[in-house]
Length: 168
Image (tube, rainbow, N blue to C red; front, side):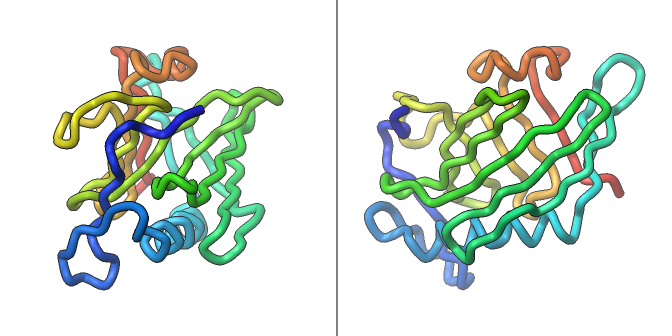
């Protein structure tokens, strides 16, 4: 699978506001991979939103974390379990994959150009400032993904969008 055609952009994780792009994104990719592990530890209770009349609880558990190189998270629901993996990709993006039932059900490339995080499908040809089909909030407490571009999520995406958020 190929990364998006455009270069990834990351806002400097030290807070200077500088924009960093490939091939200089190693520090930002590692920071994001580590923070996704921390987020799952601090906020393990999520919910899939909008299915039928109820939200579906999700429990996250970090099952592997290798500083800046890999985060592996188990997501357990009444519908079954999935394994989510975040790792730096040689392209300068953070690669996010999810597997359920032994099969890959999701693959996206993530960057952090401004306040929110953006997720793009493999091989995206969208121009630099196009609207992203996937977003994660600046505090990484919610995520919204287009089921049109990730059809494997459609059974969890009434109305065409997969939405999940931290239980508050």
